[in-house]
Each structure stands twice: as structure tokens, then as C-alpha cells.
Image (cartoon, rainbow, N blue to C red; front, top):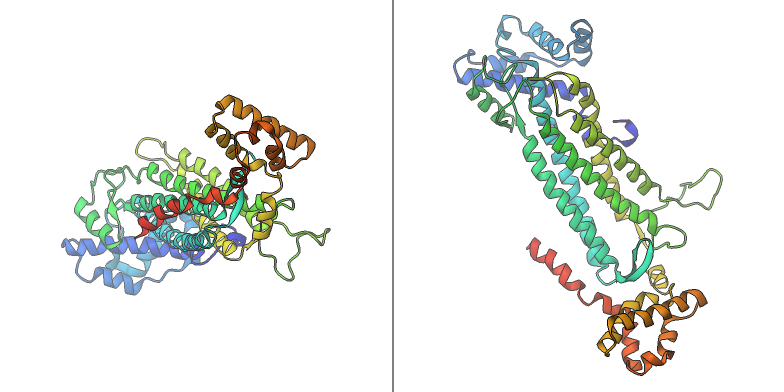
Length: 433
């Protein structure tokens, strides 16, 4: 992941030093299991732990000779151990170490994202509660539809992120599986009991059955969930971009004192944070394709997935963590222009109440087709003649004869559209109790 979009502590998770340390942790867990089984002498794991010090550069120098990263790592370690290191990597294949350590890393990455996602959920819920009754025009196809609550828009985001959190929790559970089953997954040189004990020490479970590797559908599923989360984050970012357009301006991203929106136009205040998030979501979706391509491999395993995964996992987890953290900070500092929301409700001069007029006519005895024709006729006049829709409705004899003026006034009350919003909020309040 490039430094521009890398955040701690996620970026430290994917350093070579952290990777080699996880490899060593897996090797030590196996040696400890061997000790408990009476295969390795007591104290072997402790000796290795005290003796070995990771040196990234020396391991990389060895890899130039071996052209094999795990072989270079094992060689580096056993050189420090002498004869005491004979049970290091005993009965194992490279993927026992690499895949198990990868599961550890993805589990930790998933937990970091889940923690950040929880904070984002709290931020959205607080905003949704604060804007429970804040009126805003609802838009479909980008066109004014009917009044709604800005809080309800936020509540939609909250529900979407809760679904994403549940999906990610399941994905983390699924990815928390390793394998210590040998070169073709049949436990020829290491027993399932050694695997079980070693993985338990690492906070993992054995995958039900493996080849040389953990099957890649597991990893692809994890990446798909993160890509889905990224697209959900983009939903929010895209909405902010639309609502910050000059003609709308119902919300604005924070703009710092010395910030510049353009090298040429000093007046510019662009939704650059949201635009950035939308771009990163595209990158996430592209990585999901790579993860799917990595599922079919030759026989018990080939290495075609390996080079791609060196990009995919650090980038995908890093991007999502960055997106969640960035969106949370954006929302916490988002400028919300309630006055502009109220003004925009009046832009169509009452046309957003057309369904209320339609229903009032039906309730007064009109057939649906006749009522629709009358309301559409008046709506078209309002559009084409730039007339006030309420005035046209009130003056129309066909309507005036059957709908009292006091009823018409209520028909054009925006508060009507919030009458059931409380019921929607209650669903979440009851769920959280």
C-alpha cells in the first residue's frame, strides 16, 4: 500500500519484519506442540525464542541465493541455532508457515477494521439521532421526489454499515483457520494433533481439509466482503458529493484555513475527500476479481496466486481501514446546512406534494386514473408556466369542489412525511437493547 493512504497500526501489520515474526511464531507454536508430544526435547521452543533475532536485510540477502523466501528464512534461523535447531521446521512445508501466518495477519487486519467500523457506526448513529426530524427533499433519479428526514438518510447508512459489520465478523471467523498438514495436505509427516495444538496457541482453528494450502475460496470471500464494505462506504461518499454541488449545498466537507481547492480558481471548495473514497472503492472492486482468479489452482497447489496476493492482502485491508477512518473523521466534521435543506424543499414550488393531492382526490371519490390525470395536468402547468403548484391546485374547480381548503393546506404540510419515522428508529433502538 502506498504511503499516501497508509495508516497505523494497519501498515505496521504488513511490514516484512512483522511477516517474519509471524512466521517465527508459527514455527515456535509447532515446536511447542512437538515438545508436549514428546517429539522435541523440553525447552527447545524457549531456546529458539531466546536465541533468534529477526534481521530483515540478512534474510533478503539469503533469498537472493535461494530464490525462495521461506527457505531463506529457515536457513537464517537455523544458522543461529546450531544443533539445537533440528526440530525447527520439522515435518513442515513452506505453506504450513506462510498460510497460517497469513490467516493470523488477516484476522488481525479484520479486527482492526471491525474496531474502526464500530466507531464509524457510533458516529453515524449520533448524527441520525440529532437529525431525526430534519427535513430534506428526497430525490429519485436525481430529481426532487418527496420530503423526508435527513436523519432517515443517515439511518440508512447506519443499517448498511451494521450489515457490513456482521458480514465482516463472519469473514474474520472464516479466515481464522490455518493448516499444518504438509506438502499435499495429508499429514504424512506431522499429525493432526500437532496441527490442532499449534493452531490453538495461535488463536486459529484447523481448516477442515487442505491441499498444500488453505483453499483460496476462503480468502476470496474475505476480499469480497471488504470490497462490499468499500462500495457501501462509497454510497455515503457519493451522496456527500451530490449534496455539496453548488446548486444543492446541503452539506459541505470541512475546509481548512489554508486549504486550496484549485491552483487556478481561489473560490473552489471541492468534495475531495469523498471523491478520494470513491476512487479507492473502485480499486477494491478490482482486487476482488484478482481474489476470485486465485481460487482455481493446479492439483494440490501451484504458485500463480502468490505474486498477486503480495499486493492484494496488504492493499485491500489497508484501503478499507483508511476508508473507514477517513469517512468517520469526515462525518464528524461535516457541515450540515439545514437552512439550505429547507429552501430546497421549496424549489419545485409545491410539486413534491403531488402524491398527497392525488390521494386526497381518490379519498374524495375520484377514480385513480381521473385523479392522476388532473394532478399531472396541473403539475405540467406548474413546470411549464413556472407557477406555484399549491395555487393551481387551490384554484382548480374540480379539486375545490371536493377537497376543502383546510384539507388542502394539510396536504402541503411537509411534517406529514415524518409521521412514521419514529417507528423506523424504534427498530434500531429495540435491536440495540
